[in-house]
Image (cartoon, rainbow, N blue to C red; front, side, top):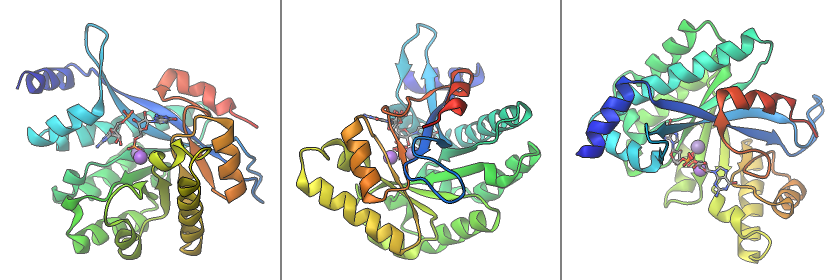
Length: 260
Ligand code: G
Ligand code: G
Ligand code: MN
Ligand code: NA
């Protein structure tokens, strides 16, 4: 309960901030992209207490959900991302920012329309914001989830299926839901250099995803060996400390200079 009170105060006092982590191209493509070049950003929420300590979103998102604050936080996140995208655009940098959606947000009627309305209110193309969703028991209502994702697609909001492979129903999600991209969970990336099982899993997700016409992103790349394996496997994009840590909006400007 104390954490809940603290979180409410932090929201009121605007102490939650978005950090941005780059996703980079792994493959050179005909449109001129080159390995290591910036593709887009993922927005990651950070709560820094007045004493300087950080609270992980893993814990406070959960509290926000229990306390009925997820709608407010979701709205704040999309506004901050739009504000940042607008600001970068004004400076001549055009980059997509993806925001993470909590499965609970799918229970809020019209939340997807609110997201698109908010993007429009910032005067940026809706394609500049994308969303990351995870499979979850709360998304068992695949019929309405599908409607939401179709709405995003109709409005050019790209959809990433996050943490792919870590849950139980990944393949069913992939079959049922209109997602544009798959993010290979970082637990499969971590041991790529030592585990032939993980190499087989990563290769199989990449092959499967390509046959389904999805963009494939690997998460949690920390070493050059992991990067090289994924490049050779044909993975499209990578995200991880090897390419760049999540940083605040000011520092994220440096990532626009990310080049091979
Ligand atoms: O950012 P890491 O840096 O610690 O994030 C931990 C977890 O919190 C991840 O699963 C991530 O998807 C989630 N997360 C980060 N930012 C947000 C956010 O803005 N909204 C939601 N719902 N989850 C987020
Ligand atoms: O669940 P989701 O994929 O949204 O969350 C991304 C999480 O992964 C965040 O907590 C982010 O800080 C973390 N992360 C990003 N890159 C790396 C990495 O290279 N290594 C590790 N261990 N974590 C990472
Ligand atoms: Mn994510
Ligand atoms: Na993930």
